[in-house]
Amino acid sequence: MPPFTPDTPVGVLGAGAMGSGIAQVAAAAGHPVVVVDASTDALGRARDGVARALEREVERKRLDEGRAAEIVARIRFADLVGAGGMEPFAGCGLVIEAIVEQLGVKRDSFAALERAVGTDCVLATNTSSLSVSSIASACRSPERVLGVHFFNPAPVMPLVELVPGVATAPEVLAATRSLVDGWGKTTVVAADTPGFIVNRIARPFYGEALRMYEEGIADAPTIDWAMREIGGFRMGPFELMDFIGHDVNFTVTRSVFEAFFYDPRYRPSLTQQRLVEAGRLGKKTGRGFYDYRDGAARPGPRTDQALGEAIVERILAMLVNEAADAVLLRVATPADIDLAMTKGVNYPKGLLAWADELGAQRVLARLTALQDEYGEDRYRPSALLRRMAREGTRFWP
Image (tube, rainbow, N blue to C red; front, side, top):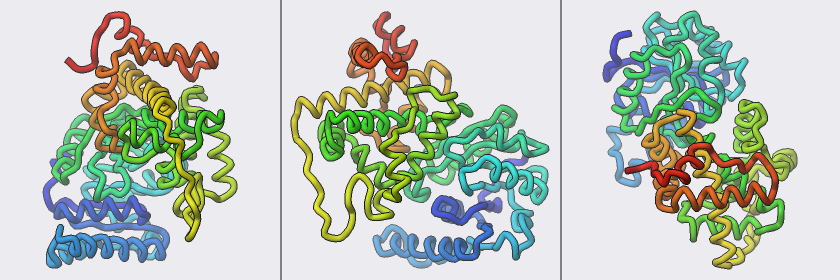
């Protein structure tokens, strides 16, 4: 496969928020871009969305009008049906798929993509939790397929997880990493395991908060207050779930849970499922854990320092345990794990560095106490954490 060049044509399959954001990133880096979607309405929204996003950048003095116009001019939008299926991708050196998170749909799309592009075109999936190897198996040349997982909104969020499948050629990973680094993104490499780095390790941020809420230990405003004001997180878990959308957040949790053969660590919450079933998806529908409708009152937290510290310690212990297990099972390097959690979800510090500050013995003691109290495998400590506590070792020198 020849190396990518600054003017390599880039294709994006899917004109949703993620697809249009990826197209904007590639076009801003100088690439001619084609965005293809089956919905002409989606293409229209994508075109307008990119234009509005660049207008805001001009208004904020981050971009001049001429540069914004150049970026817009580099992006072409094509109807999947009217343009002859995948044919608009024929001259692309890289195509990034950003469509619905359904394995069968993605596999069908990759099989069709491969028939339309040249033999040296790299095919990438923006999946957040599905198996890259399974998607790639739909292709005759799975060595050219890998995961390139952007975070929303793609033009703003710096992190991109690169995920080689079982068959991905090393040179494809290396060339794609060089390209995406050149777009100004921060890349990390993750093993092809459920949730990759961020969506795997972050599950307890939501799951353990929901568990405490369901038990009546604290309400949503109090847990959010504790994680923000004491833990230093930018948003609390309930605020963040409302912002992401419960349909999206619940689907990722369920996907990870099922992909890990129903490991209780990742069990979804019935409370969140009921919100999804009721259509209370968060900010986008006006109601979630909070009421966002005009004039709605927002309840205040119980600002109890001792309670707040206990909340933070419980959630943090679970997060550190996930990060430790990710190191143990070679999901990623310690450096990439801490980088991913700070750049991908804006954690105040890397979880492994945080573990070193607290000490493995303290984290282990909290997890052991939880496991003793509940008798659930959900709280089993990582073997690596046990080893570190016993030997007095650290993640970072």
